[in-house]
Image 1 (cartoon, rainbow, N blue to C red):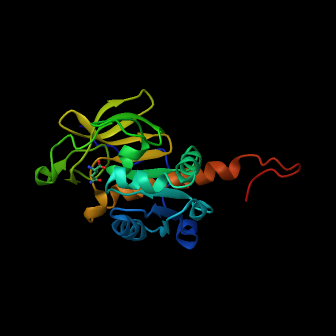
Image 2: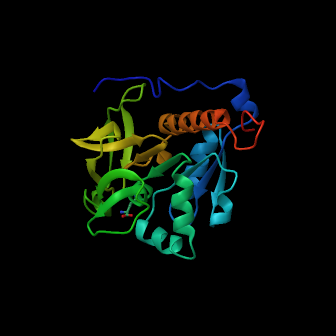
Image 3: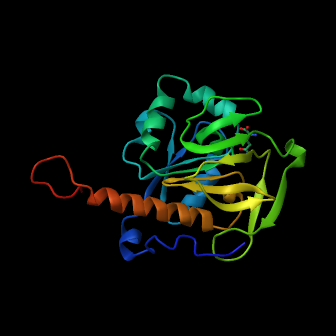
Length: 227
Ligand code: GLN
């Protein structure tokens, strides 16, 4: 597979980013949210844990960790959290790992399951087998820097991608890392390795989104840009 820069169209880290780091929420209902928070901190962001819809305000992006999607759904079903989250993620960048990828998908199989329905993919849960079939593989990706260590734990398989979905890595023929606009999802666990390339790619997406928002005209008369 051809190797390209992680994100050729996105700006590189500047002093400004170091002085005002991005604030990324990590959905902390269940799963390995601590490891995601550590990975994002190591990549230069400020990670804050999100447990209720009110925690979403002021975030530049959100990570949905791996874990158990059915359990996360149960917590999300309380009150209107799932609806608020869906609305939030229609414009806010999200990185979703494994169970998070299942939550973000438009279609979930094995068995069919409710989801946020934002990422135009079909995923089959536990498609590579049970916990005992979990594995670590070194696979090529579209990110610069050579093969990437991918940790698969009761991973879903992406069996369909929509036209607006870019495939950045595969296991056999099936996508393992995909991007659709401001959404990035992996069926493996980058937070379980020291490789920060996926985290950096996500933060670049967040930075680009933030820069685009700042240029959007605000609705107040006489106000050219948003602060
Ligand atoms: N099998 C889990 C699920 O269906 C996902 C596993 C993971 O996140 N590592 O939600």
